Amino acid sequence: GAPAFGVFHQAEECSVKTGGMTLRDYFAAKALQAMLAASTRQQSDEHMFARDAYKVADAMLRERAK
Image (cartoon, rainbow, N blue to C red; front, side):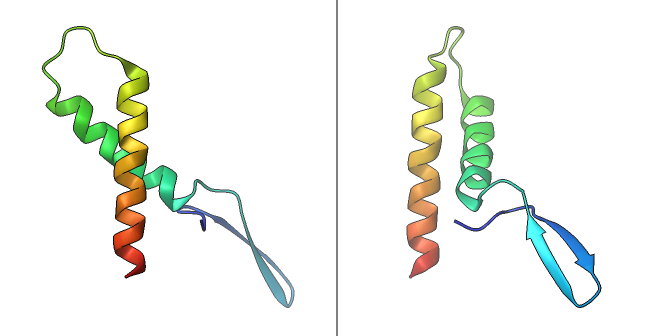
C-alpha cells in the first residue's frame, strides 16, 4: 500500500515522496489502540492483539477498495 505519512522532497522540477508508514500499518495502529483501550484483561497476549489489529486493517482496506 501507499504510505500514510510520506515526506515530500522538492528539487527544482520534481518532487519525490519517500518514507512513511503504509496505510495498512496506520489502520492497524488505530485498531490496536482501540482494542487495548477497551481491554479489561490484566495479562494480555500482545501477539493476539497485533494479529487482530491487522485483520481489522485488512478489512478496512477491502471496504475502502469497493
